[in-house]
Image (cartoon, rainbow over all chains, first blue to last red; front, side):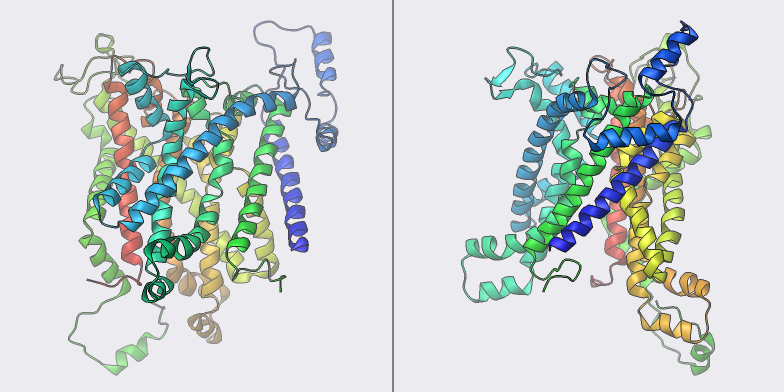
Length: 320
Length: 303
């Protein structure tokens, strides 16, 4: 177990190293720099000064080594777009907002998705099943920005009961101090697609489990429906769900650029676009490394959860 | 449908069965055509394909031809402009028809790139195993660390937008699935008897891979393509919505939805029509994909 984990972590470090190398090479291989002049030309001396300040006058490999060295000490530099902050504080501040939307979305998507999927599977062929199938079809065919647009049109402009966007504006609390009205539409729009995927997958897994021999055996033993469902069906259905649905979570908590753009949420999303446009090198590196790290860790956790849930699975054949 | 490399033997036995021959493919086709949802999906896909191919004949105007008296013209009012005009007075119907061309071009071309990278690499890794497999799988590890659409956004903002760039970038970021699938197929198929037999009669490695293993691995790949196309269309719409996808004046449904945000409170049509078309395309392709998967699954019994 420990050996497996160490192996996985080492390979994660290797992946992060290569990812940083690729990102650095890619962003430096295109023309343009962070301090290119627009209409007003800077005096050469002033420009040289700025470049020296940010270390951009040094050879490129030196810049890479220096950046990575300070990154190892958790210093990701200063974002050129917002020079009064550090990359770490800017990401922490904006990601906190994105993270809140993400967690609410995860809760809604998984909560309703699993519930709907389970009901649909258990009442297969009924109108509930048809309804859930239709809903999940709708969720997977419409991009979230399209859903967002129509939700705004319906609830903000049509019914005028919810704000069309913004974040934590005063007097906009649905439940004072706990839940803001601003959060309803973004979370709904964002959750529809993952909810559809979760419901679909849950339904398939449970239908699979319901038709298995062990459920027939349990029925034959005369077990009550409820204990068959909780002790036999749900446990077995959970195994494929963990591997398939686990990776949705890092995706959701890093946010959607689209949702944040449509609903004017001051989150992390816009920096993915603006950082590259403005050649904000430290910010790009930090963002991509953050995402890569999140995904790597999620995959490791998913694999571990798989082992914990299914005693037949062994990690790399090392466990006895 | 294990390839039979000895046709002479079959011919010489002269067994004439009165029953019509049933192969995996004919069975699959029959099941596919009996699936009503799949047929509906196929009809949708064909409809959009026809729109895309014959856009030049079907569209009443060019996609970039603007009439400034028709700016945001409502639909069903002017018979010359049946679906109204867009925000700069271009015929909305023509824009939608040409939008089908953009979407389908992206969908097909992206899958072409993804599979021409993923399939050979996956086949190679799965067949050879060992060190080759190790190296390829480390590349896969690295690619999965770059999450799809975010990496695409990064590359597009770096290299600039436009139809060709969008296709290239989406192609370069979506071949991992094809690789994984092919590799898994090859890992299991290379242990099968017919592969051993092919090797035993001295088939070259290339022949074994392409003539014996690949045809048997084709089924899941076909299903993967049918799900990959709508995914690419979805991604293109998303990039264009952000304004970093297809460049003006080329129409894209995603871009049309993006632009419509500013006008939709009054001019509902600029948002509604592209929304419907995106949904219908996605629906069509997923029905076809579902139908193909069910039809090609030999575990399902034929009714």
